Length: 145
Image (cartoon, rainbow, N blue to C red):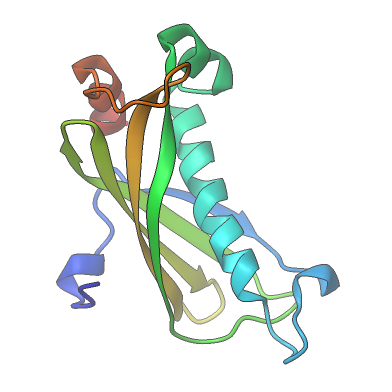
């Protein structure tokens, strides 16, 4: 994963959510579990999709859905229960039947980057599981948000 500052500058079309971890999110080391960071990566992608009109019902109507092919996460600093967290995501590239999405997870109090993720999503037929070319009307909604 590339980690230059320019690669991680949020574009104008970035989408953000906020979370506050609680005691259930804390691991045996006393900080937010790696699995919680992964959940936030998934949550912000799902909520971004819903914000542009592609919820579960919309994908059902299309007969296709995005599924994760690969997550790559760099954990940069710990978060703790009660920290206000911001997860920011954007679609970096569209290629045929796949999309690459970047996500940053930051602490609100100091703006510190806690994790960075690159996720490859495949657009697949819901019945067959086979990849499908992503329709232009789908990409256009994300590109215009």
